Each structure stands twice: as structure tokens, then as C-alpha cells.
Image (cartoon, rainbow, N blue to C red; front, side, top):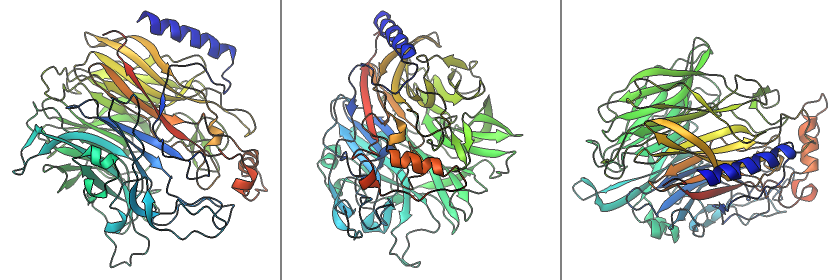
Length: 580
């Protein structure tokens, strides 16, 4: 632990001297995950919301996903003041590493519906061609719409029996929309957004660009004409000690309204597959009420322990107070009990009057709705379960100390969620304000890692002052269940989040989460990164105008902005246990 503490102290001193300015700090090496992405133009250079999974049976194999706009049209196509999502073009990026996350293989190139050659000035005419996102959606009348969730589990044999001896199966869950040219009778599902899951048994072929390496997407959400399914996460029961070994579970929020996810009711949903993702059974978990006083868990995480118990976590409200909530199933997802109200939470940030959503870094900042949502991992002893402690670790960001004083919180349970440790603060570098967090506990329960995206500057009441965003990885030893010796393992290079953007150009965009996965010897963490994204004065001015009585029109992006405006990336670090 000595060396990380020395590094942490040195970096903390430097960060204090720089007063949180968005400057690059020397750091151990991290690598680019989204290596197929061009640095220009916007929005083809935009990625966010990373996810990562490690194959417990073959831990050198790592897969990651993100919202990746590599196949979208350039802002220069057609009206140069707009940067739309091209109808029918998917955004669910996929990436592979075969050396434990130390480096990432070239981004796969598949065939599907694309607009990546729509670089203007002519209006875009999308067509079948090269894509860097999940294949087989266009062919099935669907669009891969991002919010990635990935999980490795065992592969079933011809009789449906799961065993690691059969090999591994990678699952990829994401949002999906109907392909835009489909008639109402041709649409694959009702409603606005659904949840779909693809899988592959051959990650090498998938990395090489074989469409056929992937299954056709399975639609798993129950849909009506007003349903907007959102914020899904996936997990495969990957400990062979479990009586439900091989089951796969997905959780999400079902917005049942005609307002594209902005109204109510909103129940928590869980879907279960017992045959390797071929068929799914979906059930509502808990009530649907969402009235501002009582609301149901959102921003869910789902996990299993070595005994096959299933846990679903999310942030909701009771009596107007926000809580981290937990539902649990002891019969392989057939029934759930709860919710258990684990701890109260104060969501961070201030309400942005233009977005109508909370932000932390300033006017026109990135939304942070799910900063207080629970991110969870369990030491389930995968792949065998033999050395499991089944300790549950949960992190979140809390705003009870006020704006510019947000805190990274952690709590653990050693008795299957029956009781939880008093929430503790993980103290970051001076000036760092945590936004999103993700814990990973080693399968044998000896080490906890947390990946964090943090702002390095206080809230800005303007769009002209520099802002900072950084990715970090922290580590603690687990001693008799207690998390001890928190230390910084890695701090990335600070970038300016003003260089990120929503496609509407009205605000920054970082998505809703970061991710981490651990082995017995280390961790792979992924985060949103803006070190190579240049902010644009014309966009800064446009965003500022939206807060006045005389808002201006958006600028011609490519003519007015640096080439790397919008170039947000996904980066990762593969780090070893500092105290093996």
C-alpha cells in the first residue's frame, strides 16, 4: 500500500496547487477502448456510458460496450447547424481485449445500416454498409439504441445443461427501437423503446467482424403502445456452486406513458432466461406508483451470489426521501421480496432550467440524474464459487453536503443484504467532485476497487470558464469484512467536459454511468474521457444564450468549432492488486 499512498499524496498536492483547473496530470498508463472512432467530425467522434465484463472462466478475455456514434452522419450533412441521430443507425458499440484489458483489439467492423460516409454537404442517405456497432439489428427490423450492459456466463450444451466445459457465452443487453421505415404492422414491438439481448459464443469471430458470430437480438421487455423501457443492466449467474448456474437476468425501468420516458407509472422490471438467452420470462418487481412522493427503483444493478440468490438495486423514493433500495430473490428470479430501504440519499447537483435535469459542473453541463444511483458488486467466487465470501459492495454519490461538496459513499453487507455497514466516505483527491462510480470486488472478496468519473472544478455560472473531468481508480483491502487502506491506483488525464455534447448541442453529455470488473489479481475499469475533446467558443456562446431571454440559433458546427469538438472517448485501465 505504501507506493500508491505516495503517489496519491503527490497528486493531491499538485491538484491543490492547480486549484482544480482542467490540466493534464502525469498518471500511469490508461488505454483507449473506442479505438475505431475518428477524432472528427462530430458526432461520429462521440462515445459515452461504458460497460465492461470479464470472462470469469477465461479472465484474459474482456468485453466492453458504449454508446458509440461512429456510424452516424456528420453535422455537415444537410443542415450544418444540426447533428441528428440518423434514422435507423445503431449506437451500441462493442470492443474486445484478449490480454486482460491491457490493450484493446481493433474495433470490429460488421455490416448493417450506416451513415458513416455521410460527411456532407449533401443530406444523408443511409444505406447498408460498414458499422462498428452490434450487428443483426437492421435485418430484424430494429435499431441498437445503446445503454450497454454486458455479462459473461457459461454456455449451455445441446441438452441445455450449463457448464464452463462447454465454453463461455457473452451477453449484450441494450435499448432498441423499431427500424424507422417499418409500418405499424411490420414493427417488431409496440411502444417507443424496448430491451433486447444479443449473445455470442465466439468472441474471436465477433471481434473479427463476423455478423453470424452474434445471435439475432431477443426482445425481452413487455411493451404497450406507450412503453419506454430504459436504464437496463444484465448479469449472468457465473458461479457453478449456484443451483441456478447459467441463468441470465436483466433489470430495467418501464416508463408507461406517452411522453418518451418523462412520465409515470414506472415499475422496476426483471427478465430471466434459463436457456442461454433464447427465451425470456419477464415480471414486474414491486409497485408501479411514481407520484413524486413514492417512486420505484431506477438506475438498477442486478447481481447473484454463490448460492444463486438474485439481488436488484436501484434508487427510489418513499415519503419524498430518496433511498438506495434492494429486492432479493431466493428462487432464481421466480419471485422477489422487498424493497429493503438500505440508506437515505441526497441526489447531488442543481436543476438546470434549460434541460430540466440536475447538473453539477455548470450551465449547460452534463446531466447527472443517476449519480446517486447504487452501483453494486458481489464476491460470488466465480467461476466455481468455492472461495466466495458473498460480501456485497455498493457505491453511490451523495449531495447532502451541498453543491461542490459531493461525496463518494460506500456501504457493504456480509449477510445477504439483511444489514449494511454505516455508509462511509471515500475521500478523493482535493478538489475532485465524484459524478459516477462503479465498484468491483474480487471474486474471493479480498479487494475492492472503485472507478470514478469526477469533476475537478466547482460549479460554473458561465460557459466560458474552464471545467475539468477525470477518470480515477481507487482500491481498498478487505479485512474481516471492513474496507481498509483506501488509496488511488490510477488517475487519468483531466479534460474539459465542455468539449462533449448532446446531439442537440444544448449541453454537455457524458451519459449515466462508468463500470468496473475485478479478478482475483486486479481490475479493469472504464470511464468517460474528454482529454481529446476541444470545447468550442461558438457552442459555449450558444449554450449561454439559452439562459437568456434572447436565445441564439445553433452555429455551423464544423465551420465554427475545432475539429475535435465532441470527441469524448472511453478509456480503461487494467490494474493489479497493489497488496497481493
